[in-house]
Length: 485
Image 1 (cartoon, rainbow, N blue to C red):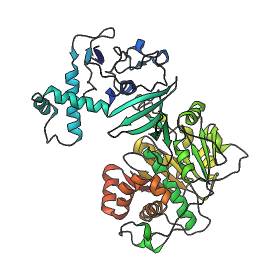
Image 2: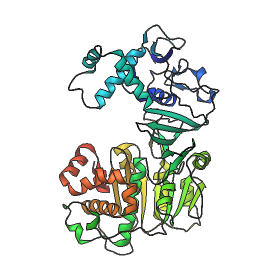
Image 3: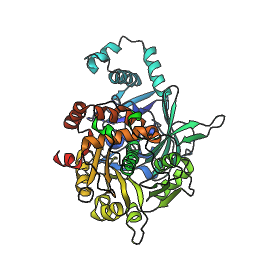
Image 4: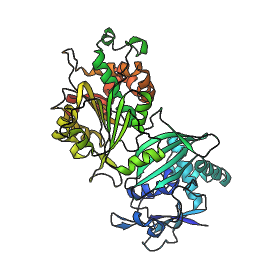
């Protein structure tokens, strides 16, 4: 059967440059929100998912890649198909024109993109490489495209009006992920966990010992900051910042086993469950305003309540600012997001305004933290959003630092210590949080890539760190640094 991916005439053709949208129907829908040239046929979509975007009606010709409207959302069949496909340039909303791009061209574009990503273009342009591919046998191109789809795919486990739960496999041997995706923003995974096959059964087992999402790993540095404040980590090692970081250079640090932790914006509870796994004696309050997300956490993400993990269907601001509640937290993690009206369609790239209000910062963070406690906020929206967050928190937090990486930006605010021995030095703070995280075995697991690939290099290489800060806006910043940018 010949299928057709419909691309509007006069628009850029997204499909050759990003192969991932061809992986599944979900990926194609996600790309359609970002590229108005991609059209989705409304009759092929569930009724609740039909919509208008930028004044262009989206149409998708049959089954590319399509989950039929009558399909069981819990089916374990992958969404993508391997039928012969043509990509068509549509000159109207009602039909597909004869100006179809054949499947063979799409396959060659997959090869070109793979060559480009490998860095082996050697200065050649796409047109140069495209010409070279004419001498490659069709069998080799077919083999590559078959491998591409064989080594990646998605399965829909749950499909409701608001949420979709996906299992994704990548690579050979495959690595499996499970994600919770807001259908209005399908390119953004609200929650993601590693899963593994359950032996002889078809049930995938959720792994809670590791974190998949960079923002979650970075938020966990709050434990290092909190441990530093409690242990007054101003050791002699801090005076030799140029020495390589080593666990043995740092006094043993262990967060209290009776920490009180709040996670605001818990979603399907990947972060709360990981914290519960590694700090079983800590009390973790997982809060989310979406009841269905919390239900899915228990149905598909292995979340279970007990005496140390409590799940709250509640507004995060109200949960922390409720009058008469006097309980305190050692760590408060805020991981909330909202669409930016000025940003790309279908993306979550800003912090809801109520989480930057004086009311929340004072009553929800400052008042609810114990001495030396840490508030950690996932800041979406790049440096402009970070400046806004710093401006909101800096009047109320003397000790404020930001971690900005290509994958995540986190703002840390620490409540004052009971003692007067404190330091606001950016260099000292960077060295100490890196050394503390490396010294705490649990954090070295939770933050492994962040520590080994970024923080440890920054802490021992002033020039490298300063270059990243000045040229790319990546690094460890004080509040004053951020506001000067």
